[in-house]
Length: 211
Image (cartoon, rainbow, N blue to C red; front, side, top):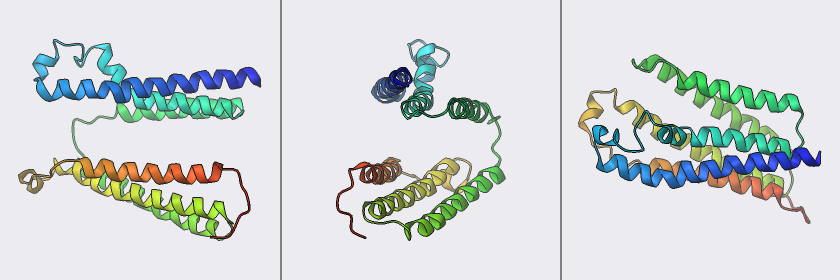
């Protein structure tokens, strides 16, 4: 068990470092390059789309987060079968989605999946409400914070879907949609409240009082 936890810690840190270095720090370099150069000029740099650096960057957060998840499961002493389900399932789903044919846009698919996301949100908060009634003290506060996170994420999804679909709507092609900064702020708020919920649950429980 001790060795398993140590391996988990190593895998976790590999995932964290990969995401931090390639997914975040390298993105500053990447953004500056792609902002100032043409695609033809970029093809002469280390960031050329057919070179390893670009692909290491492109999959940094997806693969890094999967590695971090596997590391956490190892640290938590999860069963080997759970590790396999998580690792293979995540990688397989990632590969299948990444290699979907995207040459042609299919609005019905976009709309149906958007509806599914909304349905999943409503079902999630429905079961959240049923579960909250049985919670006490810090668990209730954590649940309330988690609900705020869910709401911010669905708000972010709404505006993100609008931006993703705008390029396929003629009328929106005439509009200046402005900076996408508000969308990333909504996403940040969602993750902030989910973190606060998790942190509240992880704190040592003292004298608990119902919220």
